[in-house]
Amino acid sequence: MAIIKHKGQRVGIFIDTQNLYHSAKNLYKSKVNFGNVVKEALAGRQLIRAVAYVIRTESEEEKGFFDALNKLGIETRVKDIRVFAGGAKKADWDIGLVIDVIAMAQKLDTIILATGDGDMVPLVEYVRYTYGCQVEVIAFGKSAAGILRDAADEFIDMGENPRNYLINYRGGGGKGFSIPGFGHPTKPSEDEGIDVGQEIYDDSDPEE
Image (cartoon, rainbow, N blue to C red; front, side, top):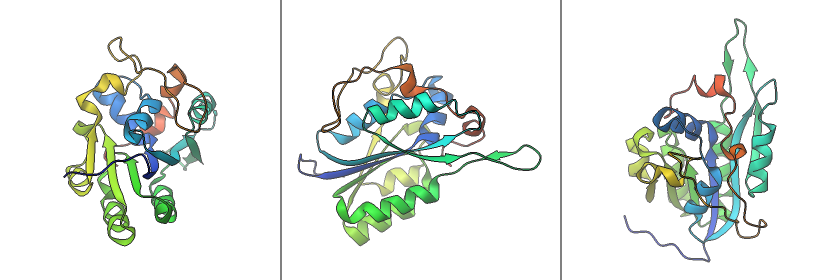
């Protein structure tokens, strides 16, 4: 499907950190360069909000990762891990992400979902038909749900050029960049793809 991208478009990027983390780890044994994900998805347009949905474990070892995202101009929405009787752990941002997208949709021309989760299809359809937003999805094609790919106005498959979206993948890494309005170019670091919340992320399916 042909879509229109121009510098005046107001863009919101919503990052399902858990989904991308899990996909990169299982498919490529690597970590995501979230800075390059935002840069490629934005494609020179006007960034209104970039939000990453993240999990904080009891040890709070993810602080460096959260700080790295913030330095790139990516906001973090943080949820604490829940520990149930018997030791089971759970943390899920799906509902929170959906609520934020709907709340911001009227102020955006384009919504970009960085996830391969097929459960996002109703959200894609709702904001397209209710608010007239263009909806784009960026994810690793091998772990993205087909129904989500079909529902979006555009699907960017990071798997077609994984070196551009992963930290030091096969010796290659993305170049530093600056998000318009968010400071100076930033070199990719291990913090951008830090191994966070492993116990949670490893329990999840990439499409969930």
